Length: 129
Image 1 (cartoon, rainbow, N blue to C red):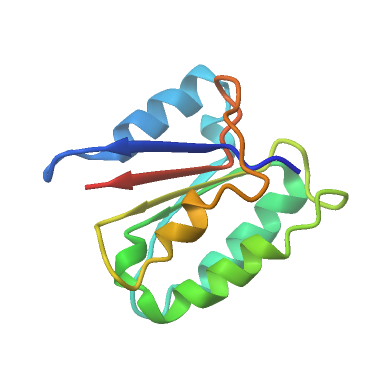
Image 2 (spheres, helix red, strand yellow; image 1 turned 180 degrees about the vertical axis):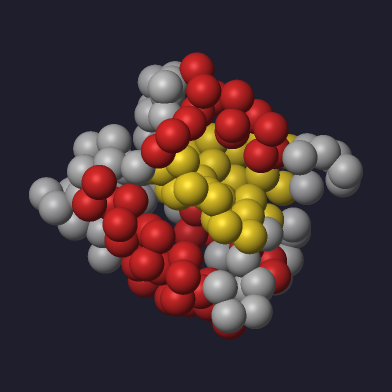
């Protein structure tokens, strides 16, 4: 499985969700996109959404990862254990976060298996606000 990363720096006050929703509309995935703003207690819900999206070929958008620092190791394990033979090929995982020492950006930036993808193929999107 290739992990395609898209890194974009934004200034404080911009909303990367606008770009994602526009992109989902262009790709005809707007009805298959589910978003959740992370924070207290949202980790188990987000994990369930991710598992469903992997099975069904949907897109899942985790906003504000910096608000769920205790859940980031779980998210990292979920990503590391994605089986390319079992995940739907249309599955995409999109992430946003403010800069934070608790957010594992080094894992998103890790070169291990990551490559630049064609337009429309990112698995993860990280916006640094």
